[in-house]
Image (cartoon, rainbow, N blue to C red; front, side, top):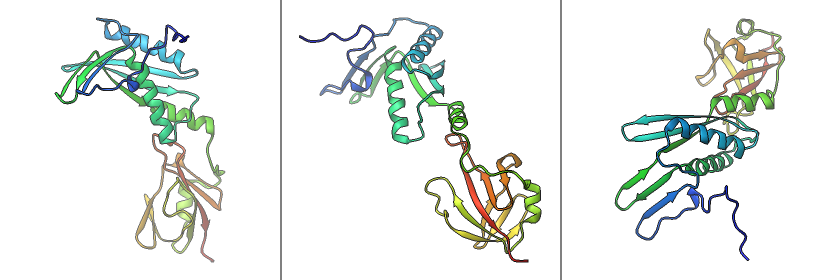
Length: 233
């Protein structure tokens, strides 16, 4: 005896639907409503994703343009750690499958033909990365005993800085470099290598360790951690 699928589950998801041998593709989601207005569609998708992905919050908005309509889904927060690219792509595909349940697609790649009820775009928002960093807490915290302005005054040519922590794959990790010049916006290492100073809020120094923030949208806590070795007086 074949067990019936739950009523709320589609028989086949968008990513599981194949083209036929003539290049035809036809998918109609089980939650599709003919003629649905874009604001109502976005509201339904947002409610659905909030239930489907436990603990996650989303922003869902629509755009209309000459070629059709688009639904933009942005993840604002959630329990999953999406730092790993493989996990992130799998999560984005899962969201895309759930969004496609609200629409239809008919296409043929041999004939360059496509008709859709709406296009969709999945984004992992800046708010998500900030929330993830806040939950993790800063790595390699350094007590801010010396201000950035004071560090610039005390750092001298001939001092060395050893890079002891950095984002994965940083080619200079473990290297010790001599300071050749200290300027208002940056310092110059031997070999004409420049290191920009961050904003004051992204700098911390306890007299031995120097933490320079260089975070970006997907890793707000990214930083360089140096051991400061002043030249002998």
